Length: 148
Image (cartoon, rainbow, N blue to C red; front, side, top):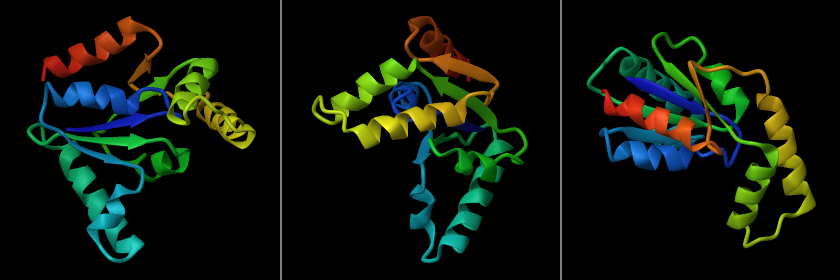
């Protein structure tokens, strides 16, 4: 099965996948990890896309693809049977989490980038939306994987 975890930075996609890997054996890819599959970007993407499409139809093979860049979402939009899960959190929570990654300092350009990223994802829907600032949303996601 193919799960696409999508949303802005610091919305909990990586944290959720760590918990899910305790439940199911899943191969995880983030961003442009696919570039390691071949020397050229085009060939690497084609190999990766084929792998994602195959996983979408296979209930025994689990792949989680973490997407932060909305343009990457557009590249996988036509994969049938992919389970798209939208991750979100309030902008202030996202900024706080990112600030922790940067030892408590949030440069202005990074803050603007997070604001733009958050706005870019507005209106994008998934089969399930998980607001990681709400414990019950994360619990619902974990329960979904426990039934596999």
